[in-house]
Length: 180
Length: 414
Ligand code: HEM
Ligand code: FES
Image (cartoon, rainbow over all chains, first blue to last red; front, side, top):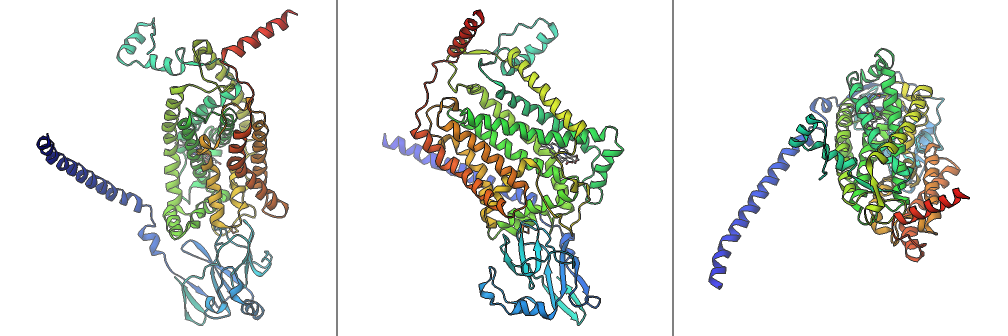
């Protein structure tokens, strides 16, 4: 009895091992074959290549904003007035929903560069043109679900969780920046 | 198996090799027994199936003229409207058909809620129905993006941005969905691909849904089991003709929209080509998404709103356990009966709130209605089922039918 069981016991684990091993290889192989399908949906090389935009600041007057496109997104470039800079800097940043000091957000206090996409669900906030509402904090106002941004593009009120993003940019000279 | 007696020798020849006629007869013919007491609320299942076929047929023809590219999509839809023979008719059928499809499915779901059709032994049938509803939502959302108008573009932006709420991987997933850094041409292309194929996936799930249905047959207004042949009538001709009558009404309503007010349920902004640099002043989803949109906006946190919206559908999967009542049909539930109608009103209120800008009183109303929605499922349903004493339930389906028929006969003799 015991010896007969033993004889079978010697066979079965071997078969089980082969089954598990084959199954594992099949699953890993199938997963590896699915990855190209999934990854093909990520941004393609030519989409990634459109990565930088240059902006000439000379034509922008004080208190004026322009909108340029970078990676298909609007980027706000604003020549801030002294008053706006003061408003942005005179506040205790630690009390804000997304606490960041204006000094960390503007390389040159006069120039504010922001990705003009509401961090809530991606609408474009109003406030670029003088006739548009600029919200309770004098910056931008997103009409979709009511987010208010201040003169540093920081979220102050409404459902957006974060400040308007500051893209990576460099000053090429006094009147030219490159975004990206 | 049906013991079909086919007279026509050609049909008999086919049946012998491929028993398709007996299959149909067993599935929706004279050999499929259905409860004899089904009311008009049972029309909406077959109507939903017909609406699906209508979407597929009009969609396939539209796809012959539509161009899925950001530079051509809007113009190709305008060309369908102005140049393609009967193009306006096809497009209006497809757009209004989608809206009525949702109306029909929502009635179908509330029918299931009222008569306890999600309870034992129909749990899987119910789940498959919810899966169909979710697939429909995905399909209609992607279809709405295709004309590439302002509402298309911004609906796509706002809805895909919901995924950025997920911690850590949110942005990666969203850019993966877009195939870029914003909604753009890659997004439009894949949405077209998926919009074409998902309806066929829905057809597949509908087959599973019907398979599960046929296992235990239809529920009925009394919510009691079929006890024997005296409780049923053959599906054909009784319910086939009843369903055809319902179809006639459906087609009248569809025709009224298509011919007299084809843009009634649409938004004028979608006749403005998509502009990635300008959000319309007031973006609203199609009416059939409004209650969910209201729940999304009711929670003052981005991730919280997304979770609440997902939960509002997920909770439906749990109904078989949430509902503790001993009887299926709300007809015999003196207390729950009121709460059912409160839920209907609540969902309508959510729909109204979803259409309003999120200001003033609407914020409060939206929050209360959202709260009530979840209170209904999580607290009221289990609790009422537990303490409520149901009214006496008839022993069998044919008894009350015979009794009321007898009473009517007596009434007529007087
Ligand atoms: C579950 C079934 C379906 C639903 C709920 C649905 C829904 C929709 C919706 C809401 C639109 C936007 C209509 C508008 O405002 O213009 C649309 C557009 C479109 N659909 Fe579908 N659809 C379905 C099936 C299909 C199928 C199977 C195809 C193709 C094989 C298709 C092809 C199209 C095309 C080409 C458009 C763009 C033209 C247009 O805007 O009218 N649809 N669909
Ligand atoms: S997208 Fe700006 S508030 Fe929602």
